[in-house]
Image (cartoon, rainbow over all chains, first blue to last red):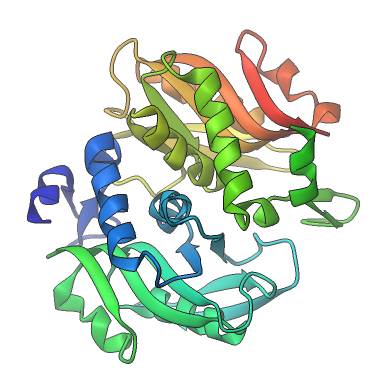
Amino acid sequence: MEHLKQLIRDIPDFPQPDILFRDITPLLGHPTAFREVVAALAERFRGRVDVVAGIESRGFIFGAPLALELDVPFVPIRKVGKLPGEKLTREYALEYGTATLEIHTDAVGPGQRVLVLDDLLATGGTARAAAGLIEAVGGSVEAVAVAIELLFLDGRGALEGYEVHSLVQY
Amino acid sequence: MEHLKQLIRDIPDFPQPDILFRDITPLLGHPTAFREVVAALAERFRGRVDVVAGIESRGFIFGAPLALELDVPFVPIRKVGKLPGEKLTREYALEYGTATLEIHTDAVGPGQRVLVLDDLLATGGTARAAAGLIEAVGGSVEAVAVAIELLFLDGRGALEGYEVHSLVQY
């Protein structure tokens, strides 16, 4: 889906010097293209997943419509301190420092097949933490799907053992 | 839509003592009910809005599918430091301290009618800041819509002059 790159804006030096940020807001501003992303993901995973889990925040933007399209529950995987119920927490390493994700312990039933969704795959640390949380609450990770994959950061390497699917690669 | 309350879980003392948190994760876990929320909002605003602007993060969960349903652009209004492009910033008061929202300056065209969407209306400070940002970049706020309204906090008072629409009231 190379044509989607026309709707992904390059912003140099964000969030820090020498990082080229891939901005999806133009894509979100084109409902036909946004719908195409959701449809492409739905086509690939229809019948294969019982739950769509979106990673806060941009994973919510693609994950919520996808869950509705697939007619399955949507589960938010959130940053620390946001989920109000009984939850599990996983801290993971970033290039500098750490980040933390959380999931409600009742979010996924035993053995349910879960699609982990985010907007972008970089080093894979966030998606791996999310997948670990799914498994820790009893779910089975069917795949990790993203709109954009940054190939040079080898997120697939960090996600060995998981199916990884992306629509646009850089 | 009182029946949706069955899918909104009360969590006492979150995020702090004496606050009763209204947790929408059970609703998100029921695709039929989740779809009903999106459909109800779409029915009310179809033909009346050119853009749906969702407030980070839970406003994304309802706003993205609603924008797709209405076939209009989705604009994310984000917390500080997340949007990569040229942007406007608005700080607003919370009960303790302040919070900040941002919008891309090119997110909304001149005179476009914008629906501001969030999951919950409490004191109205967040929605008012979001509406102010929409207007500051040249848009027109058609309405503020939420899934849940906490009537006792009088968010409508803070949003005087705006149409406010909620599906479930406490």
